[in-house]
View 1: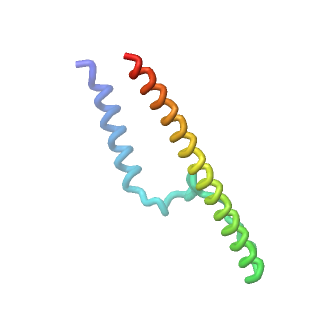
View 2: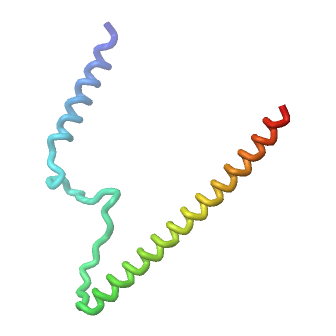
View 3: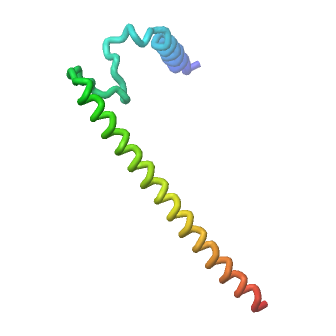
Length: 96
């Protein structure tokens, strides 16, 4: 009958976890988390906003193009390696 303390600790842990689940996210003091980034409340004119948007879109399209080229080259290299290995396997099997 020496497990009473462990059971009491388990029950209090379950109660505390249930209490934490009942609290609202918006009621907490610290609203930030791992994904919260600092915000900047800087006023930007319409023209500057358009140039920023176009810069972001240009960088995104360049990144997408680079990813496509890298994927295409990796597929070509993989196909080349598979064909070489298949040719070697056929040569090895033709000996026997």
